[in-house]
Image (cartoon, rainbow, N blue to C red; front, side, top):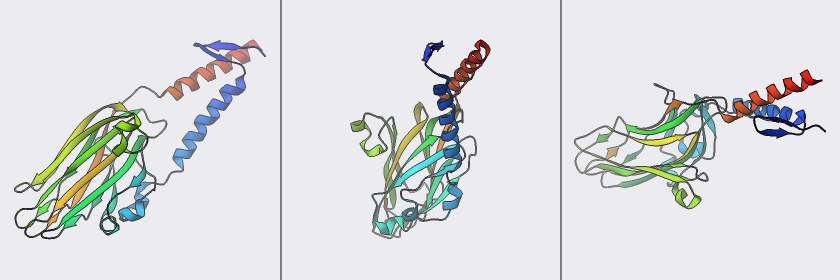
Length: 241
């Protein structure tokens, strides 16, 4: 069978190109079949564990937590629609009673869905409704973003990934908190949030924990370059026949 070379790619048969096109179509169809995260709005973190869902052009998957079930039953989930090209997720309801320390952990993966020309550039965390009742209350912890890992930000470096992190700390007189971590442009991240709430003299309430992912435009994915090359090569075959 005649071999055709186009743009440095050797192809033995147009069947290979057709298979590549079919694979791209299957990938897009699979993404379209994923549930919207709005279906999980109001669900507890317990019910969200191991689920996958979509917000805007982002797939959120592999939700996990090392917190006690009593904590994951306390925390509820909401999707965050993009404000300025920054879809995300929200966790709310976390609180610590007076003199109590509550350990909270949530992890998940986020990636740009196929056919969307964007790359994640910043991980953003905000707590806009903190309530420190009495004195001595505090919130502290660590936000971690792993690029190129194996699905778990906690083991990022051991898995050969690049780890980006930020410390979290808030106490009186502040009742809001926000921070962001700039990440080399990437199609996906593994994320882990670890927080400790201390109730102080009269209790501490986190209110809402918002985690968003700002993104920037990117060149068309390589799959589209392959698709274009394939279509052009097919047209050449037709003309030669």
